Length: 381
Image 1 (cartoon, rainbow, N blue to C red):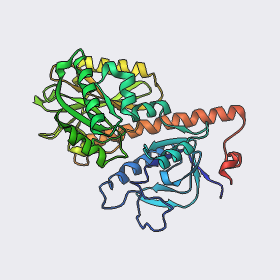
Image 2: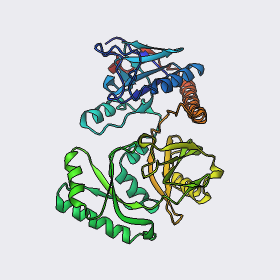
Image 3: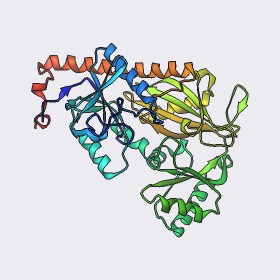
Image 4: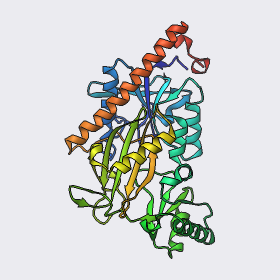
């Protein structure tokens, strides 16, 4: 293998969504195929790479299928001005901005390989990634602030029935049990974007089992449905709404709400939710305080992550889930959203610049600069 090109920053994306620069059968001129539902991400990550250049950071964009070693990919995309181009040469970076959360064995293996060297650092704390990636783990650690949660571990009628019974008991014992209806929400334990979320009546055991058996490779958790369509209002409009607080370096740097479309309880933009940025003074003081308390418990002061909440119709705030890979895209029809999304990317890149400078300073002190000649032998085989 030829000596990898050293990059200050490498963005890694899920191979199922992005075209590899080394794919000879793909004629796409951009990482995200033109005409696809993800085409807008070309603009997002083009801006990300442009911002890196403005901070004198060399940066590339690659996919999980290209991973061949610690911090190393077989090829990458670069963005110069307004044009994407493929570089069919290996690249290496010690700083990774990863946007892939594998659930299958091969994907998990690639992720372990990527970070198998202590010198390769993800932008976010690995333990926080593991915690938020698993909704059951998240609940187990933060159950005091969360909606009751039970895993569906046994895919049989009896197994589902017992799980629902255990959930009913856990809900009944909750100090604010009146916040919940008898309906059951089933979620992909490792899912995101509001996908694979279902709502059932407590008697619909067969229907729950049917969904589980149709997706046998997916793990699910169940929760009581929280009544929250009247819990929070913005501009005197009450609707099912979730609230997201974005943290970087231990501080809230942005906040926004997502309002579900009529008749829907899922608030994600992928499910038709409307995203609106709000300043903290527009949000309930008790919710912000609870979020900061959770952030203090997590104690991850050098990581980017989000905490999502809903407010019940009784006025109680519940932690929904956390995320170390929040979406960086924006609604092109809303200028405010584009401005705020670009601000977030700017802050991420500024943090990369600070870390790169710290690395350079440390290397100069030890007089062992990181060059292609001093890369570990694994990159030179």
